[in-house]
Length: 119
Image (cartoon, rainbow, N blue to C red; front, top):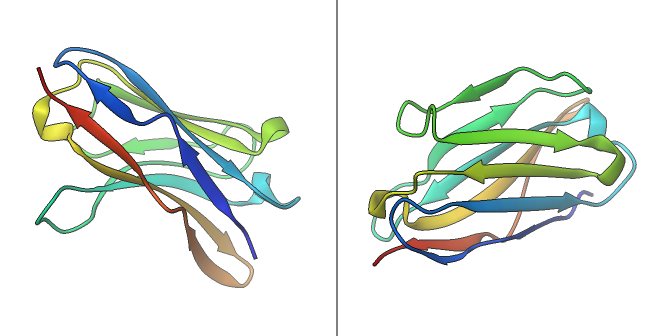
């Protein structure tokens, strides 16, 4: 069982920045693919970014955040980050961390952290 705890959310003005963190329990963090999803009020959860397993995992981003958000991981700290720059009001959502294990296949979710972009 893997527990994920997100932090770093809050209220920020348009154009501002936030960095989300997701700390994972256990000793197999480096073997998991990690990612971020978000869910705005009244909308479906949507994928934001992902990073592959290992120390040099490849990254991918949703078109809506490409060039503004950066996902990274620190395997020594069992933590994945989401650096969010040039934030827009439409980025307002609850952001969830996900860990994907492949043997056996299973997804683990965090509890979410609220990000509000407003002036």
